[in-house]
Image 1 (tube, rainbow over the protein chains, first blue to last red):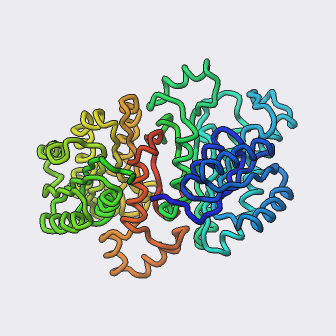
Image 2 (image 1 turned 180 degrees about the vertical axis):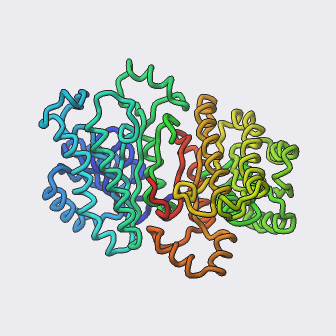
Image 3 (image 1 turned 180 degrees about the horizontal axis):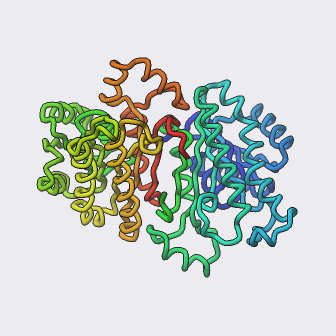
Length: 249
Length: 251
């Protein structure tokens, strides 16, 4: 079940961490994977690793915040690798910059702009580039990686990140409404606390997570894999949280 | 390896409809399944059908409104399979009536066939699920979120099921037991009957589904249940997964 043979998948921000885990998992299920990252060396490393493991992948570095660059890159990739069947919007955080946590009142516009650019504009650019093709071919899967910071008020100092993620998540749900009749599904995976957070912070957090541990790239990949599959063809506009049960709504 | 190889499941209401779809998907994914239904003849037929697929399937005829008999379902599964990895509470009866016209008996029907068996079976299966690091999948409905007229007693039972599922997920997570909820829209016998006596209403409703089709009990709803029951979903608990083609738009 849940095989992706013959499908072409694009995973943005896949040069490390969650995105790399998702790219590996999609390739292991038979998809040909386009590994995007802002940095060419990181994208290339993950694509090579997938190739060495017997999968098919190509590196495609571009900046999701640059709409023209996205359109141009995906046009050339479509010619060499085939049109995109599965889009995983993973690129996020503060884009290429450092993730600085600050109360909104203390933020200057040039500090919040990068969060909106990568987490919301980036998702819009990527969906906009692949959606017409998916609709024309009558099959498509869009999975947007969001965050529980977009649904809850727990983490301090991530207001703009949460707002941008909430925007991307809700855009994805509207795409589900608009593109469903053409055979395209669009869903949201909402992440809780992942094992990428700092250790001192982690111990305190883990005690609040029912499953008693932080999330891993493999946990995220499993959910993305399911939502990308033929078998999940009746799931659209849904939000699936991968958060170990904290919190449930 | 199949997704559910070596796992044993209980599926209530498994003789037909969505529950049968889940039982069928489970069998094809390698699980052993105890199906429980009050309809003896239909249940036996489903048992035979699933055994023909090569499944290790046992049918137990039981009326789920008989609360005292419910722990016997757990005993039966342990006796048959030696373990319980997955409990699926899918059985639910209800009468579609306006709230002002709903009798005590109508309301009790929803609770007695849905909420009470779900609670009692979760409690009875819990020690076995701790042992197997197993999971529960309960069924709820988008009709509650969309506040559909005439669905009062049904929606009330289903939202109560969703509530206890989430609390159980919090309480049982440390023991490795997961609890999730599926809200389906599928071609169950109930929906098929509705399609026959109100074809125009049915067509209107399908037009509101983003994917413009009705879900399939086995290949759509069953597949989602296989995913949630699999080890790959080990970090997913307390969640409600809508498998409704985008019918419910209350996000």
